[in-house]
Length: 533
Image 1 (cartoon, rainbow, N blue to C red):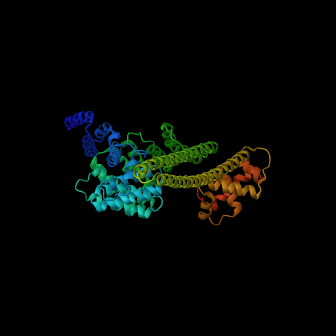
Image 2 (image 1 turned 135 degrees about the vertical axis):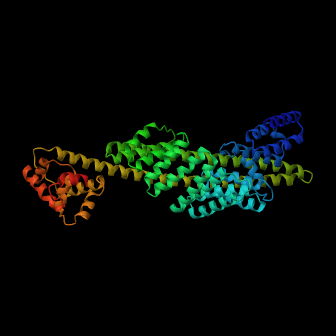
Image 3 (image 1 turned 30 degrees about the vertical axis):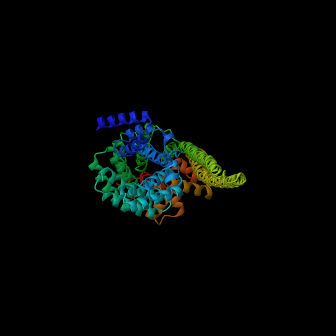
């Protein structure tokens, strides 16, 4: 097969050198056929084509085939400079066999650049026309991408679209297990966004079975990662941890997002030490990954009651989320600026070409008519261009304001979190001061007791609520006494609070045993019972 491709490339090169006009068409035909099996060879063929000698239709076909070859080679088509040439030509030619493919790749481009509305429009057109033309493969691809676009705005519709894509592809005679698995995983993702966890788990189990038939470790890894997300939302943290481990092992531990998900799974499963050790091994450099990295560290520090580090990690997470949104805003600004500029320059070039054609056609009739037409056409074009630029500018300003509101909302959330953590830290320090007081009598007001109650409930897992549910006959004073025991106050410190001797405190400890049902010679001490409660 490789020898045949080399021979074909050699022949094409010879023809291209001779400058035969017909060779260009054959070269594009060959490249189009090679995109399915040898996309890199297709790119080599296309790179040898002289674009200057192509007509408008052939240039559009060249641009589209080049985009398809890039996509098949694993390159994300995030630059529309070439693709837009094809899109401009095929946009109003629904009868053309390449129309649906052009709409699909334009929709994919918009999806990669977060232009949801345009992506939805192009992908829907691609799916509809592909269905009419009987091109089921392109229809499936368009529906699968459309499901991803709809996921955040209309999750229920996304589920229906994903199921349709999966059903159509599974019925194709040349359907492969690896593609079947990924279509099924898209159904899983759509159900997960629609909060249909049981159905998502059922579909994911089926997808895992398909991935195991492929023997592709990356595919299997992706399936286990989806299952980990489902089990995490179902509060099955042990199962989620197991699936995350499988996912990372199968991907050779080189996928940062999967490594971060595994660290989160350790955190959810209360394996704090494993989580911390694992986080130290992860190397991240992208702002969105760094945000998740520091947010996980913040949660781990909070669980360990390490509030100073918790605040520090929260600040780091906030810094990177600011950077992430800032970069996103800058990218969008560059994109819209380049788009407006490109459209403006393209409009000018097209208008000039039209003017030249009109001048040549009308010069024999009247020089005056030509001058009037040029002035009128140019003014109309200039007015239209100004309106378009104004519209794009207003749209950009609106998106910028929306983004600023989002950042302000994030800042408020993080500020609230910091204040809450700092307050808990101050309370914790105050309790430590009480523990260390060995001489003076400590006077606690009701406001002090209320702060201590809030601290204990937050840090000790709703201790007071659980205590009252278990022992409803305890009075408020009894509960206060139990709180001091829970905080591991010494008898001497408790004596300072109650202004009684240590001996009296020990007697109260013995008396309180009966209030919580600790009777008999072999019963544990009140302190050990309350501290373990």
